[in-house]
Image 1 (cartoon, rainbow, N blue to C red):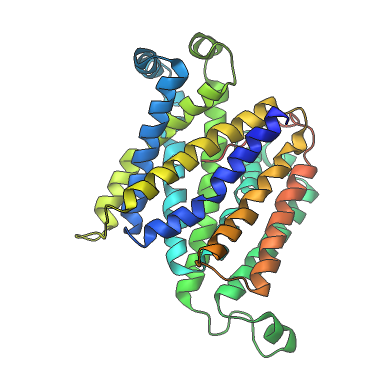
Image 2 (cartoon, helix red, strand yellow):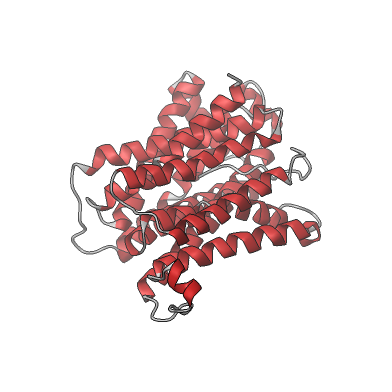
Length: 344
């Protein structure tokens, strides 16, 4: 099997377990403590992997020390990316508490489309001049999917809507609508984190990259930038935990294996997704990523955390279709510089 296909499959398979593991963890630990512990454990796991990548604890420490000698405008990017990763994870687990697990997962999966928009807005010289008619179509498709999921979360029935027995947003539960909003914010944060981390990797001095990794754009380099963002996001995670969590937060020792599995999923996803895009000869390789939301939904249903409704099926289908069209309409791999998007 082609190496890029294998890598993207590993990334998608890893991330497909992310919603299920968070749903399991939420039964055992409070949301803010969950987000903080995931941030901490993932940072530690990625550092251990960096030591293995560089085959030396000393080399891992040296590369971190050398990082501090880089310009401040470059060093601030991992903090922004890491904060985005933490916020994305926190908003997602909060949305899981307020709406169906499947609905929250499918909305969160809007992040690839949002990442392209963020990249065009922030990383291109012409900024919004590069926004195209096709982008508007993709946004309409995604918003239509979001509307369907929102209606389902509000207790609406597709049949009743078609028969005129239900009205849009009438008698909507505010908590469900808040869950939808948090899931959207989660997708935005993951998109921001991915774009900013890609930008950071591209801005690293070539001498720095070659000295430690042998060449540019390697699996080890991807893990290094990922580790930095998680460590830099820790202050925000600690602050949110102490400000917003209960005085006696819910916690169970049984949660630790689940937390480590979440960390492993995130590290594997980040490394292999980035690596797949770097070595792929066909930009449409990214189409394989969309087995992730499908498989995530399957896991949630199998383990009894969600049920499917016609509106969720339609809404999720529209969101996935928008993302698939996004990849198909952007076949030229390097058409827009610095727009590779990595998962958090």
